[in-house]
Length: 213
Ligand SMILES: [Fe+2]
Image (tube, helix red, strand yellow):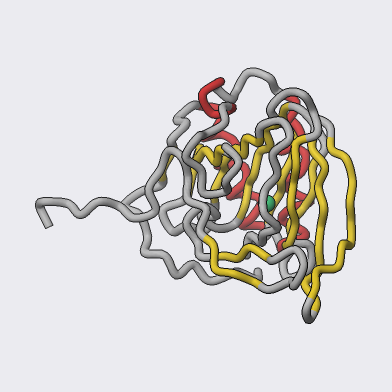
């Protein structure tokens, strides 16, 4: 099936930052679905039932991955917490924590995948970059359990904002190492793309050099 390039150097091993039986089970099932899928859309459809169950389960995500982060690549105290990533950078699972009133910049992901709301409420806005502007193509409120597919090059440029009085937490399952790839933010008025790497609060993008090499 169609794959995007992963120019980042591979990691030594798969990285289970949240190393639980539940996360390992989810990753195993997701990989099996991807292996059988004929397209990113098909992969999203196959993964959807288990993703829905994950969003509905209040027990699997520890509170520390539902906290805002003062130092944040997204700005606004927005925390991007890595939970799992594949050694070849072809898959990542992370939470995005957006405090009340905060919003992300308009950004892309450069990978297909699923994003769903776990806590709080958000508004999501999808955009189509046009010459000299951004066209708003979709705007809708999200409640816990709601989710959407990212399928670049369509449906990849968006922004989310928290509309609830409590911090919102969304779960991202994407087919790249989203926090580490060089992607883009977009100027709201001109539509101009700027290079952007969000990073993670709790994981580095490069492995430290090993002394025995
Ligand atoms: Fe996003």
